[in-house]
Length: 265
View 1 (cartoon, rainbow, N blue to C red):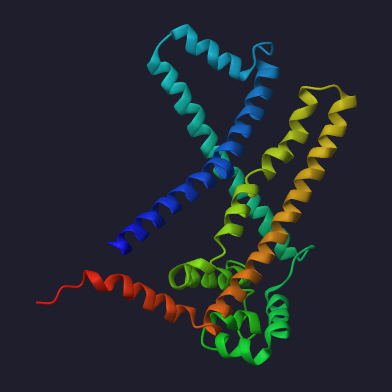
View 2 (cartoon, rainbow, N blue to C red):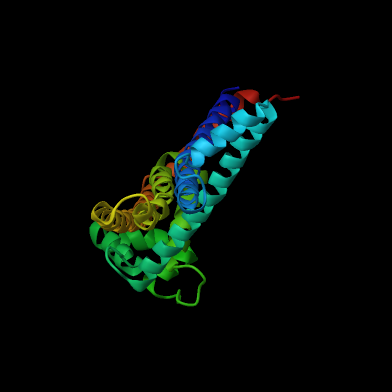
């Protein structure tokens, strides 16, 4: 019974986490893009005094039908989600390009792994990583240049998935959520530098455009720094779980919870 309650709690928590990431990291940035693009269109080709949202509200009232109102809500929501996913994928592509070029604050996998070995002890680290072939990407025994993704992503994802299954308490889900939520804001913020001249005069539009570009660049810099930290945290937590024998403890705890449910005969 206890295990069923724990599993239900984990499911509810994961649904809540996914909903939070979808709303903050996908829908909200997509809605910003929808408003930016739609307002710019109305500024040049539509009734500018009414605006995009005003136009949608007016049309909804004109038909005076709950079906039309529901259609408008679904249309705005679906468009926003589509634009949000597009914006996030584009931002991840820019981030990957940034990291592949080696621009600051990039830290290569070999550099991260070397720092961990110096801090925690080469012998201690090698005893664990030598059991998993994926770490050959970190030691230079496997060439990662021909791989479709960066070597860091393979090691990071392996450690994250291992921790998720073996020791959920040590996973790096918090950083992953933060990165996904902030990533979607890069494109709307950068697009504001193009949209602002159509709404403001040059004396205000130019400073706003410069501020938008600077903010988007800083946000991308911060995201790339967080991705480096996520890689380091995933590896360190992976090593810590092995050094402290946490996988065995987790397995024993799970078996203890399942024991009362067994029936003999």
